Image (cartoon, rainbow, N blue to C red; front, side, top):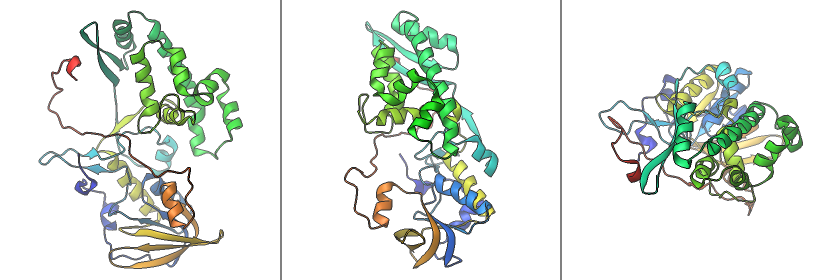
Length: 353
């Protein structure tokens, strides 16, 4: 494992930001953005392009938030994503508007799940080649029934993805508006109306296949298949709606390649970005706000007509000195990622993986 302190070489704009002695150029801005993660950077670029005065205050010594790269293997020019590591939910409209030129690679293989059947090592392979995927399902389950159910299920989710994804760059629709947009009562009930575990159990009969489907519902979330809050449904939808296809691509140079270019786009548009500047408090009367910050070298206050909080809800509650919501828990990690640099794939039998 590695830390973002071993960050890879950064863009010209990103390198210019690394000066904790800098202070805001102005005392008042149209918009102050708390946090320089990917959402904050995109917001800064758009607002600055619209002619507004924009200041981004980032606590760490670099921008990017959870979408950063590191070069953890000494002697090897391999830049890997430290946290967020795949690209799917970035709308093409944002890429076209802001112009980042980072490259991605499509994954031919979606997943491989090793198992044993009657003492025989085998597994379920899901990949772009439909014939090979069907053969893998047949070898595991003994028939085409589960694969046919798989095709119907993911045909349904693609229909939903094509309808839902464009709403991410539009005003938030109401539940009723979104249901009308999906325009498929069975799909709505399956993905929005009841715990996803019920849908999966009604659709598939093989437990391993059920587990593979539910991976996208449980990854990165403390939840379970039958959670009545439907957190697992929301997690699943996040994983399957990207750009209407659900494809997850690997960024060349890690996620930092993207956020460095977003930093460049924001700075080029006229946004001011200060790293190493932590926001410690926000005062607001609902019409204007004062944002208090500190760095290793100084502390101060800037005024803003608007404050955009690129932080967790619990962090925003603390910055506003509001009473914590008992139902609102602080973010907590739920998975571990291990990066390896390999010359070849290991020759390990599936039963030993």
